[in-house]
Length: 135
Image (tube, rainbow, N blue to C red):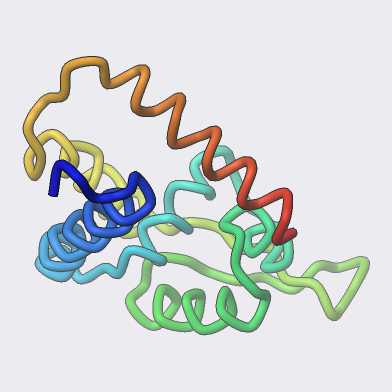
């Protein structure tokens, strides 16, 4: 693996991390997408469109995620009184508890990294560059 290109290493690491997350979140009754939504709602209610934009997914994808979270009792959607097409999405108490339980997953699942700040900065740069071309 030492001779692999960086992109292949990143892709492999991402898949392995994703598998670990999926397994741990499944034990909490969540998906990765659901955890992202619960995190994004940490600052308060948001519209489905805003959630999709912040999560960098399509609105239809966000709609399916919200349906699952709503069925699980983790979020509620309320119609905007000024625009009937718009719904505000908010975490429920169960959603806040589920989000709190995910807060230690990274430390529980993965070893501490040397130069974690440098890795985070590099990943943020890759995401920003890739997002700029896509969005």
